[in-house]
Amino acid sequence: MELSQLNKDQILDIKPTFAKALLIPALLCVGLGIFVLQKPLVWQDIFVLVIFYQIALFGISVANHRYFSHKAFKATPFFEFILFLTSGIAFQTPALTWAAVHRKHHQYSDREEDPHSPWFKEGRALNFWEGFWHSHVYWIFDLKILSLIKKYTPDLYQNTRLVKWQRYHVLVGVIGVIIPGFIEAAMLGSWDGFIRGVFWGGFFRVMLLHNAIFLVNSWGCHYGMGYRAHETTDKSTNNAWLFPFILGEAWHNNHHAYQASATTSHRWYELDPHYWMLKIFEKIGWASDLRKHA
Ligand SMILES: [Zn+2]
Ligand SMILES: [Zn+2]
Image (cartoon, rainbow, N blue to C red; front, side):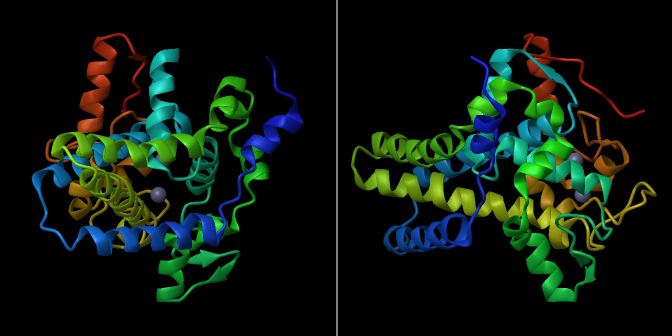
């Protein structure tokens, strides 16, 4: 069934508020943390944290970034649905919003119109701490989502299937927080495991990955840390210390130099496991036309 423009706009125009997107999740995370951290860490805590962190990182790096934002490869409808699910589990802004903001970032990187620049906000130069907080998280509350999507992602906006899926973004995110609870409850054989799983694989995992990704925009890859392999017109850098947290996304200067490439690895030591995964998905027929830098 086709969606009218009005319905599409209602689905897409989900504005993150300070209370819903930051304050309430942070309080829940701290509250659960106080309860859970009174008990010794067990390997099952680490297990759900690592598994769900990697699923969510895949949702940001492969789904939101390389697929929805840059169209660095083609996906079968089934794989596209998997990409949508992992994007939802990551629980950042929905895929269309993420892609629109990111395409604008590439158009204006480190210039006054950059939506999450550590250097500017609405044309005003920022000092060190203003720049950090704006580029790290507060830019989210300034978004004019509908006009961004219509201007920067008209291709995705036309895709009724994607817009319909986006209606379930929050539901998928919540399920992604609860499932690790059931898994750890089953592993430990107690409902105590449910609380632990919801904390380690849910709230703590979301908080950790959000901050790792936000660091790309703030101090990690646009503020002079790391090295520049390419003389791009922006200030982007590659940053090895972010690799354990965001894998190949750490090679951000490489990415700015060749934005549509399915891989960020330009040298043997710049590892990009998500590209290796894409090659496997290509082998089994789920992904195709992987674009590569020159
Ligand atoms: Zn960038
Ligand atoms: Zn990009």
